[in-house]
Amino acid sequence: MKYVSTRGGESCSSAYAIKKGLASDGGLFLPDEIPHIDKEYITKLCSLSYAERAAEVMSLFLADDYSYDELLDDCRSAYSAEKFKGGAAPIHELKDGIAVLELWHGPTAAFKDMALQIMPRLLSRSLSKTGEKRCSIILVATSGDTGKAALEGYRDIDGIKILVFYPVHGVSTVQKLQMATQKGNNVSVASIVGNFDDAQNGVKQIFADEDFAKMLDEKGYFLSSANSINWGRLVPQIVYYISAYCDLVTSGSIKLGEEINICVPTGNFGNIFAAYLAKEMGLFVNKFICASNSNNVLTDFINTGVYDRNRKFYATISPSMDILISSNLERLLRILSNEEDVREYMSSLAKNGRYEVKSQLGEKIRKEFYAGFCTEEETMATIKAVFDSDNYLIDTHTAVGLKCAKEYVKQSNDNHKMLVASTASPYKFAKDVLFSLNNEVCETELESIDRLSEVSGTDIAYPLVDIAKREVRFNPENAIEKDKMREEIVAKML
Ligand SMILES: *Cc1c(COP(=O)(O)O)cnc(C)c1O
Image 1 (spheres, rainbow, N blue to C red):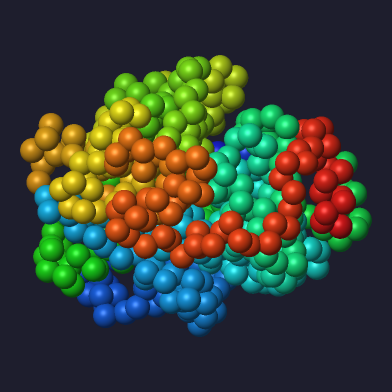
Image 2: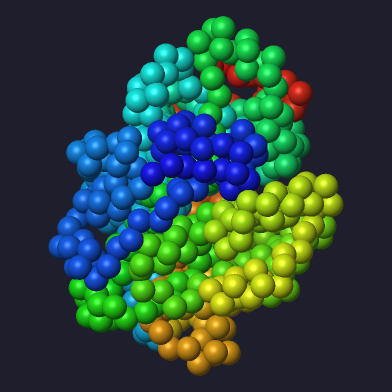
């Protein structure tokens, strides 16, 4: 199986695709064929543990470079009971029949752990498989969740170092503390003056700086990326949709072969695209519900065929979905059209911040995807309604998903079993969740965590227990100017 750029300019093996991240022509890697699964395969998976299911599914895509035993070894360490204390991807069924897929039981309490616990192990193996002698430096710009999950995933992995940049005033107190107290011998964290776009643009410029790359190369280093444009992050995300289907069959919620609907609260279009790939493989899915917050660029795109990022940016209470360029959409466009059209759309996006897809492509997308969005008031109301009806606590991102899922059912009368991806622990966004429940405001975000536990009668997510008492290793208040990011890399990584 080869991995080919969505823009057609490059192809390589899976190990190279994971090491490189982005193709040289600016496109994203996709396998040139999609492996097929059937009822028999799903029946076989039903009797396996999550780690075994993950190794099975990932090996369908990666077997050319990674042996099944290597994958199984890595999956067992990545998804251990010690790291995922509440199980890797358990399902909670609500009274109205909606099944919530909890993806946040990992070491940083957000769904990013599902991929970032395994991907560093894949990268580490790809370095030796491709004969790489240099040390890899992972550069991350984060608005909060990715940075912490990447630090935790890459810490103390041989041959790799990681540096995370975040906007000094752009992340929550909890997210800041999570990063400042990060353990590990190969990690560093820096805050920069400016917003998330400044951090992201700074990192992108460093990736494109050939002189800097040459200097690093001479010293035995090269740069690599950990965000969801990397195939190594997508393939582990396919697993939990197939695994959830197995669990729904095993629990008797659905019959084997019955189609389900899948709703995903969406930002960069990575998580929902992984679900779409599961369907392409043969998983029995009827419709995808793409849920956005007030930054509803995807809702408009799916409904009209026009992608237009020239619009107001909102800072919402579901910040991990505050995004106006959903990079992974490019992969869907490639599967449903061709390289030539993708190149045209992407160059128009770069030039004008906008593109319009051919009407045929728009129809194909609408056949698979329903798109909705959720305002701030609706997000808070959904958190309260679900707690009142089911005594079940959800975070702000999951609330966006649930609201859109319910709205779709009402409008369509489509009563396929609905699976909603729950992407973060409510404790990660304790302040807004607490306020949604009873309009209560605590002095600090850390107090909100304790108070939320009291009010809801639920346990604090284990990665956030005692977070205030941990040793602060990185001083986040010492923000650096954005033109000093290279100096920071040299000082902290070489
Ligand atoms: C990253 C993130 C999302 C968005 O996922 P995408 O793959 O970017 O669509 C949603 N919710 C939470 C909590 C996240 O951290």
